[in-house]
Length: 432
Image (cartoon, rainbow, N blue to C red; front, side):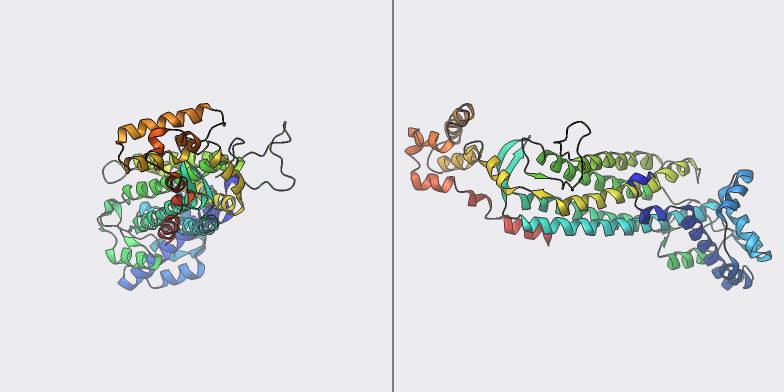
């Protein structure tokens, strides 16, 4: 976790303090149920609630000797609890604690990411409605295609992040799993009732078959979901970067007073936040592959996944959290230039109406092949005229066109309202 790209709310979830706090809660809940079942004395959970605590520095000190983090943690707790500590962790294995705690951390992280998505969706909805009728050129292959609206652009991204929210909710359920099944997952030394009790208290579900560890296909799905969300972050960020190019300048990131864009060129206003998000998205997606590779473990368990998850767990969640909040700020403050959008829309001399012309000719008795040749030949004249000719003027001097299309028909073809008549319906559907 790099402080520059870390919000404290998410970082706290993966700090040792929170992890050991969850471990202690798992051990205490286990003792409560075991005391009820008569496996351990009733004083054990009472003392754990009353005296149970840990010292992180002491855990680190013990681990340097024993080379085992769970044993180091249990030893630290024992130093506070006293004689009843011999009943702590009764019949359990390290993975019971570590995997269940990791599930809790990931669900906590998912809750925060869901809040982030809500904030981004709110910002996108507001700006989409604000600009639902702001005409701009739509581009395919980076080339002018046909008119659209800026609000419709944003509505498309809104829909993507709405899907992202649903995927993350499902991924949260996928990972919200508890395993308290003992060595190799047979419950030979711990009653399944203990697992059910802990799962209910922590808001989790018992693993179907744990084999001592929670199957890593669950984690793979979780991190894959984060990767897809990151891809949507980059998609929107790239759109903003393109729109901010000097030759386009239809929208740009907010440039605050006193901000500087370049150490060499004082005039620069660079899309640094969007570029930053493009890079962060690459990192989050990069964590997906090791999560997939973690699915394959030896027999009932090994720890080849452990070192991977100690890295990608916090890093993926922290990075995506930061990215979503930053993207929300970009959208909220995004500078939009409708006049420039109009200028860009008109800069090709009406070529954007070529398809409507093609369709009108076919509807008036000309074959599609011939109509295409007629429109394309006139369009190429406009392309090569360096702004001196418009498509409409070219068509008005073409006999095959004027035989089929009068002034009223051309007025209808070159009416921008044709491109906005369904915008309200589309945006309503996206924002529903």
